[in-house]
Amino acid sequence: MREAIEPTLRKALALGTAAMLVATLSALAVVRADNRNGGTDLAAGGQSGSFSSEASGGPTDVAGVQYEAGTDGAVGGATGGGDGATSGGPTGGGATGGRATAAGPGGQRIVPSSGTDCPDYNPNEGVFCDKFLVGGTTVLSGPLAIYGDQGLKGGLAYIAWFNSVLAPREQIRQIKLIWYNDDLDPNKTLQFVQRLREVDKVLYLGGITSPEATSKYLEESKFPLIGDIGLSPKSYVNPYIFATAPSEQLRNPLRVKIAKQRFGVKSFAVIQDVLPSVDTKPFQDAWKQGASDYGVEMVDYVEISSTASDCSGQFSRVIQKKPEYLVLPTASGVLLACLREAKKFSVQPGGANSSWLKGWTGGSNLQVEVDNCKPLCEGMLSIGTIFADPRVSQTEQMRIYRENMARYAPNVDITGFIAINYYHVGWVTYNLIKSAGITWNLSRTNLVRAAENFGPFETGFGNVVRWGKSLPREPWNCGYPVVVKGDKWVFESEKTCL
Image 1 (cartoon, rainbow, N blue to C red):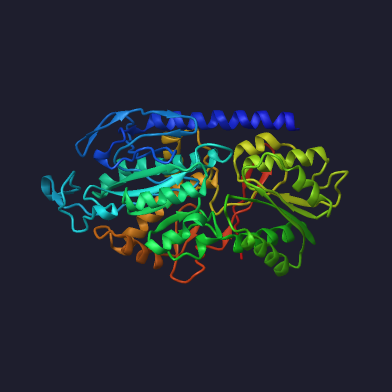
Image 2: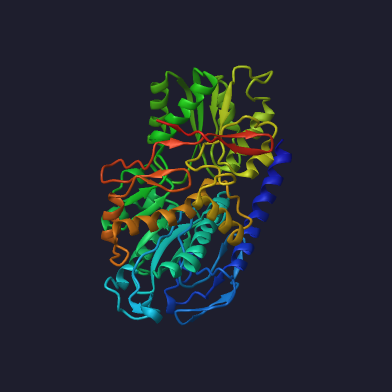
């Protein structure tokens, strides 16, 4: 199993990441990064850039800047520059704001290409009359690069549509992204977040790889992060972080509830994958709470790095307790490492050597996981998702999502919740700004105030977002089960809620 899975996965991830970068950067019109337009230089060993996207993908001239198709790019990173983008990451996002102040033919209002003739002009907070600045960090190297790349491409696909369709139609400002590749290093994340606020002077963060490492700085500097997928327990207790997915404190008990309902299990064990620097005590407490709430015993809990390639010690330990349900890691690489061990020990639900195991869960809905684990993983539940199945959902926003991903990010797996999240965050933030009436009155303070009073908002992607002032801040308490059936992940249409 190791020989079959490991080379195939490495090849798939490498080729997939390269293809996504080439296809997306070919489809997007990108201007060279330079200080003239607020682009950032490489710093602290990380890659940076600011992007602009065109519907045509060809050269154009916007706000007096000459754009050209194509830019420097390579597997593991890219650079570029230009007006209008969205933050990416494993996290990312985007929005729109501002107001048109110049009059065109027939009295039509248009966004000024330069000048200071808008009431909220404030370059110290990244607000200009023709654009505003959004910042973020991502990871484009190592085992989790596939998630960073998908988040970035999902966000860019939204912004390509926004800047070429929605902004011109509504005569509102475009967005410019300034981002850094932090290599999943919490220290680099903090350094880049500080730079984004103090040097690049962006309006807000659309996503970063380590809310854990930056939480104190964000709170002290009142620097908002809008759209985090929930990469740290601190994402829910910081007044300046607004997450989109339920926290582990809700998600883990929800997974226990599903296991109890579907399989009637009386015990479970957890192999919890964790990101660098994250405090895992809230994870353990959440699993314990789920066990208590649903009358199920947690017989073992062991941790593993989300970037690990060897699960032998963790897997051999938990199966000694013979749990009726097994929670495997979420990240693709480490999940498949654990499944190699399952193959070695002949462990699977209902197997001849593991009759004690009734079911298991793991993975993040990426097709590469199924491609490399079937038929062993037949019937496995993933971590689940807050989004409806993008392949079949008929909402207007999901339809536009499919079209934009096909056009601007054709090699990205649209079922991954990272890609969906950092595409849909742009739509969410746009509606946050519009509903609060601050389209022409943008500032960090006003964004935070608007977010504190936002929702419930049905996004059109299957989830609901509701933020508030009270902490911990939980945006929603539901999710959709996702199950391996045959050669793909199948999203169930009925959500499960706490």
